[in-house]
Structure formats: structure tokens, C-alpha cells
Image (tube, rainbow over all chains, first blue to last red; front, side, top):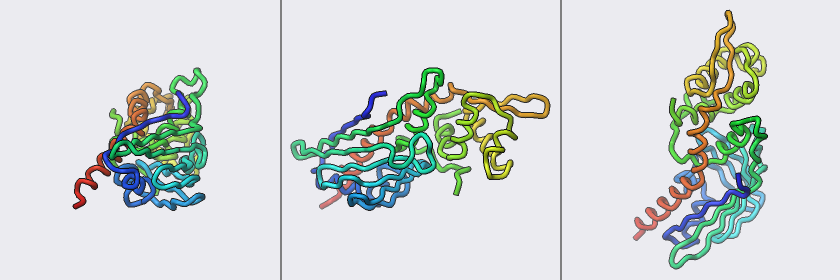
Length: 143
Length: 104
């Protein structure tokens, strides 16, 4: 895979209108994850549960409304421990809207070819997040 | 077997550990349970979820049940995972724009 992983999207709202959706626990869960506890100050915690995966990290850079950097990992994961990867989101004015650019860095590399499923990579990807579809509640989830 | 079932199966940390244990070699249920502090019944439930999701292959040898990974079950989920950030960002866009449209 390529590192960093990048993605971008244009949003019809100004950066100042978009930024809170990245730092407010009540707003972030409307587009990613099902529970969040966020402290958007440098060194403040990022806690976000996504389809049962406990994503944990901390904010490194909080520059509203243009730039946000935070670490990202899964509690209890060997392949992607908390703090092991970094997500940077930039919001640039684009007309009367926003161009959002995301870079996810330090993702674990693919495993050696003899592990044909790239298992560690796969589990890391699982933890990377953002449930594109809702897999529903986990009947056997640990409580 | 469905992508949802696979994702549900993978959402639980102990089940991900089980998959790591049987990634390179076949193991008996008892050997797998030996790696966990939870009851054998709990491990057995996890094995059933993984098997039903198509992630594990089960083979009987006498009274033992042996488990190994089924790597081919992963492929559809990989495609899904590769779309995670883009899908999340699309939801962010729709949420922000819908909220803005609702404001007076």
C-alpha cells in the first residue's frame, strides 16, 4: 500500500462550519463511529469507538478552522496500537466551500508475501475506521 | 457468508487474536482456549462466530476439532475497508451540508 494514505472531498460549507464536526464528540459520531470522547487541545485525548473497535489517540495540532492532527490506533491491538499512526486533516477554502484533505500516515506495511492475506495490514485497516456501512451491533462483543 | 458477518466477527479483539493464532497453523479448540483467560465456552462461542462468518475452517480429527484460517473470506472485506475513509468523508459532507441547509 501507499503511505501516507490520502483522501479528499469538497464540502459546500466554509471551513469554520466543517471544523467542529472533527472535534465535537456529538457531531463526529454523526459521520464516524458510535461513541466518542474528544478533548480537542494539543495533548488532549481522542476516543472513538467504531464498529466495536476502540480507536484511541491524542490531538497533536488543533488549529481551527484549517488544520487538525491526531494520533490513531486501536486499544489492545498489536498491529495498530494507540498512538502508532497519525491522521492529518486540512480544510482549505474553495470558493464558498471547503476542500478537505486527509492524510493517514505510519500505517503498518503489508506483511511478507508468504502471508498471502497481509493479515496485520488487514486488521490495521479494520481499525482504521469509519464504518462505510453499518455492520450492526456485535452480539458477542466484549463488554 | 456476508461482509457484515465478517466485520462483526472481526470487531471483537479476542476473535482477532484467535485468527492471529491460527493464521499459520491449524490448532485444536483446546489449544486455542489455552491462550485465553476466559471460559472454554466463551472461546467456543467465538470460534462459532468466526466459523459462521467464513473466516475459519473446522476439521474433525477423532474427538478433536481443528481450526485454520480461510484467507479467501477476507477479500470482500478488504475492498470494503479500502473504502473506509472515502465513505466516512462522504458521510461527513452530507451531514455538514444537510445541517447547513436546515439552518435559517
